[in-house]
Image (cartoon, rainbow, N blue to C red):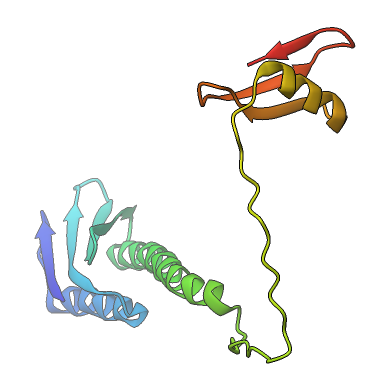
Length: 173
């Protein structure tokens, strides 16, 4: 992981650098492929310190946290807490997505191959073929089924639907 600490309108002393480096060490615990992390510390000359914390994670996920406070160390702590929260959510999301596929495969149960016994009988069934029918035949089949609609293929091979509107009228789609 590449790290950088930059001071903007602010002199970086050794204690400030050490404190910022400890923040970088704290984000390593999430076991993410962190490419780089940078921290820009600034003083706006109005009694406010700013911290911009940028973490680049593999697969184009970038966390950018901007925090302002009257105390520089407090601003670093607040930015670090927000970055940890964001990285933890991202790590949980990756972990959940990776485990979900495995769980859906077998639901935690071992699959046992079925054995074929000698006394099983296989019955061959005729497949139900859909032959093209005309509108009168479709109307007759609709009346026999007692349903409100009937789906069929017409003589031209188009799928059609005939519906019962009332006792003497039918709709054809």
